[in-house]
Image 1 (cartoon, rainbow, N blue to C red):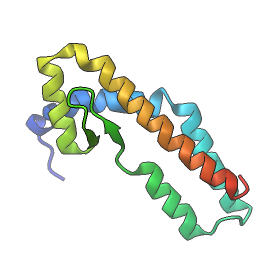
Image 2: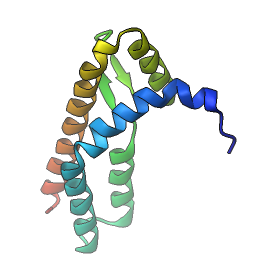
Image 3: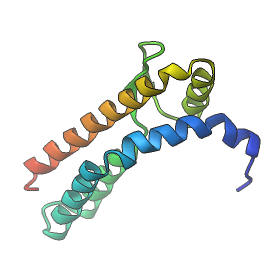
Length: 121
């Protein structure tokens, strides 16, 4: 895998904020989802394929409402580059992006927990 400083700098700012908002700040609920998945697998309430399906959904790119455009976006590498550019031009949007990502992540994690609970978790 080739590393490019130039490409990394295009996404660095947005990636740092995104990871903090969706993983670090929400570590408690994220752990709860993960542990529920593992418990259901270990108890035989879900099979390995179902576990892998949930794992894929848990790790899939997040859909969120972009505070700058009002449009639904998916946080991909391309979107991270776009957001980094937006934040360079308007740093005041930083907290709005963090909130949008955090809210979308909470909704995703809670939805997964609800589904898992219906399976006996």
